[in-house]
Amino acid sequence: MTRAWRVERATAPAAELVARPAPRTARRTLSLLAVTAPAVVLGSTQPDDVVDRARTDSAGLAVARRRSGGGAVLVRPGELLWADVFVPAGDPLWTDDVGRAFRWLGPVWTSSLRALGVDARWHDGPLRETRWSRLVCFAGVGPGEVLVGGRKVVGISQRRTRAGARFHCAALRAWDARALLAVLALPDDEREAAAAELPSVATGVGVELEQLEAALSRELAAATV
Image (tube, rainbow, N blue to C red; front, side, top):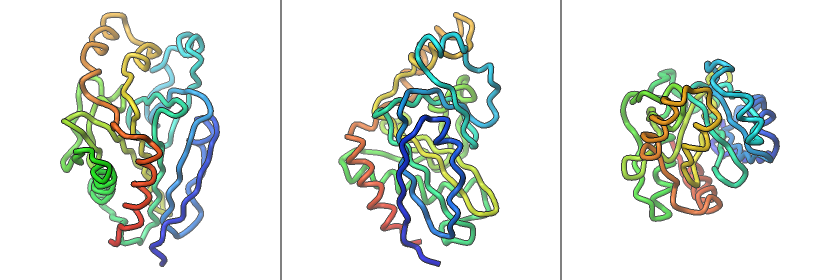
C-alpha cells in the first residue's frame, strides 16, 4: 500500500462539499475544500431547528449538514482552511480505537502551525465539553484538536466506514462567535450569555491560510508512520 498522499481540490457550495463521497481509493487522501458562499454547517446529530431559518435567510446563509458529529460551524469564503483527511482501513495511520484515531493528526496540525511560528499545542486527552459545545463546534475541545494560548484554532471531527476514517478539519482565520450565534435558534438571554462567553474559547490561527495549507501538505507528506 502506497503511503504517498493523493491531493484533490474542490470548490462548491457547502451542501455539495459535505455530500461528497469518501475517496474510492486505498490511498491516503487530502481534500482541500473551499466554499463559494457562506453557510452554517451542522453536525450529523444536530436537529434542524438548531438554526433559525428566518435569521439564516436574512443573513444570506445556507444551511448544510456534514456526516460527522459535533456542533455548528460558520463557513465563509476565504475565512477558514477546510481540509478533509482520509486514511484507508489497514493503513499504518489507521487505528480501531476511535478515541485514539486523532493522535497522529493533532501533531501534524501542530507541527504545521509551529513551522509558521505559531505556538500551537494539540489536545491529548478526552473531550472537554462546555455549556455550549453541543451547539457550537469551537466551544469544546476534542482529542487531537489544536489550541493556541488555550484557545481552539483547529476543529476536527471524524466519520468512519469500512473503507477508512475521514477527518473533517477546519482551521479558522478568525473566530466570529457572534455571527454564528446570531442565526441560531436561542432565547435572547441564552444568546447574550453565549455571546459573552464564546469569544474567549477560540481564535484565529494568526497566519495566512495559504501558508498553512502549504505547511499542512508538507507535514502530511512527512508522516512516515
